[in-house]
Amino acid sequence: MSKAPAKAKDKDAADEVAPKSKKKLIIIVAAVLLASAGGAAGWHFLGPKPHTKEVKKEPPKPPVFLPLETFTLNLQPEGSENFLQATLVVQVEDEKASESLKLYMPMVRNRLLQLLSSKTAEELSTLDGKKKLTAEVLAQLKTPMDKGGEPIAVKDVLFNDFVIQ
Image (cartoon, rainbow, N blue to C red; front, side, top):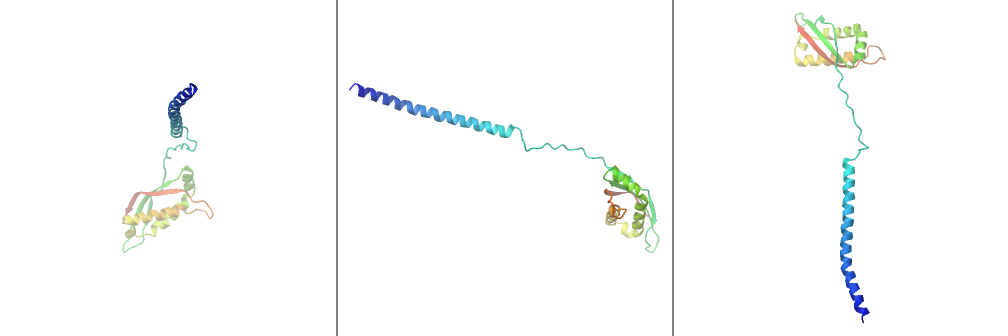
């Protein structure tokens, strides 16, 4: 009989140790999982970003303006003769476009003289008339000067002087 009570004592001791060791095991596993999840999250948010490319922004290019000689011409008659004196400045993409425009300057002036002389004083005296004229001048300048040639990279047309008399 002495052996039976010893087995009972060992069994009771084993039962007491088992719940404590299971709790320890669960706590250790949870701590390891929590630490690894924290490390993974840290790596994800703070680690290197392989898909992100650094985009270097270039400073904007300075504008390139080409002033044209002053145009003085007769407008279409509306009962009395009117004259137009206008100084235009053309904004181009770059120096290459500026040189190209200078190369074709006689053709440019011819096109613009024909366009401007086809207008009446009444058409050009309103803001809408001036905006429409700007669009028409742009269209003329963007049309290739030679057949099959490249269009000139013109960005805008500005009026520095505009006098109707």
